[in-house]
Image (cartoon, rainbow, N blue to C red; front, side):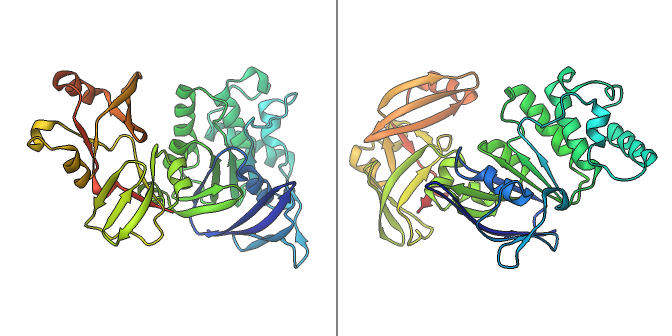
Length: 355
């Protein structure tokens, strides 16, 4: 399984400049709205025409500007699942699934039955899309794609219009339905949880370019770039001044860290996730003073405000610029018993050194 995409497309003042090769079966593309995620998918599908470049899937060239190759969408054998599923509203479920199938009437009917069984659509074959739930519509759209056995499936923000409960349910259903599909699946999303659950490999796109790419779990653990850290959920950032390979100052927080691990030369920012702080009470530090707290890489706890959510409480700390500390519900009880901490400590292993 392999996909190569090296394309450029200029649209007004926006330039899409994407270059990646992957052998993974499940690829996620993460980025903010308007960064070029959907344009990348539409270029692979043949809906958008790049100005320059080359697109290859499973050894087949779908587009090459230099060689003047540009296969029509129906010739690319790429399935595209749109945000709104793009079902034909006046056609029944079975006719939607059969759309685009080749072969005899009997062969088409057999394939539609097979897909109806696989995607749990029995009894719904005569219904119109408007008579189906969101989950059923998604299954029909996926059945229609899978019916013609594409080399690749493209998922364009497939859960963006759904509420949280339905979204979680459909994510699990989609993973199950695609579990035995051996082709490549690319899913674009601005939702980090969706991408984390779905993909083996991740591309983070920022303003038309790939900010970082690699194994999904590794990128969440070490995003490398500030934009990638932000998109993977990091809330706290400080400008950084690298003093030497093991000493760095977080300028916005007024803290200097001395680390065991090496600090990369490229470091311009430090990031720290809001759930990773360690509360420290003054007594445990033997009466640590402000200077000591700085030297040991700790934030003095000065509460600005807080917000209570169903499963956690968010605290906003005054540290030159606001720092977010998110506390799970079971840990909130400890704070209620002991009172607010005097300091927040950092776990060195969880410091993000970013460019």
